[in-house]
Each structure stands twice: as structure tokens, then as C-alpha cells.
Image 1 (cartoon, one colour):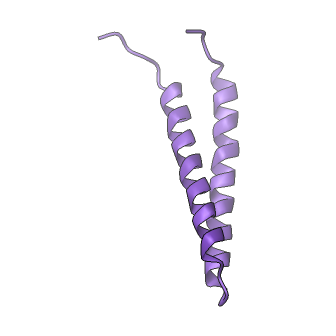
Image 2 (cartoon, one colour):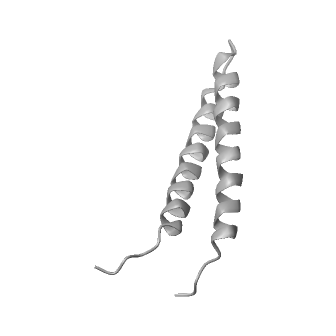
Length: 68
């Protein structure tokens, strides 16, 4: 497996964390409205969860493998 550039992974992490935070704020704003669109909220939450999984995957790739 090719060696990955930690700087690229870190940059991706920053982008994903910003998007995750933005989605959190968008969900809160949408949920606060009287006529909240439940389907839109569910879609945003699903996207937010997918981003969280991507963040976890990238963070685990930054941890060096140690031979036991």
C-alpha cells in the first residue's frame, strides 16, 4: 500500500470538520422553524453522519501502524 501524505489527510480532515459543523448549524436552524421540513432534516443528518464516518476513517489513517 502506498504511503499517504499526512498533510493531505489533515487538510481533508479540516474540510470535513468544517462541513460537519456547518451541517450541525443548518440542522439546528431548520429544526427551529415552525414549518420544519422533516425530510430535509433527515437528509442533512444522514449527510452529517456520513461525514463523521469519513472523519473517523481519516483520523485512523493518520495513526501509524505498529508491528506487534
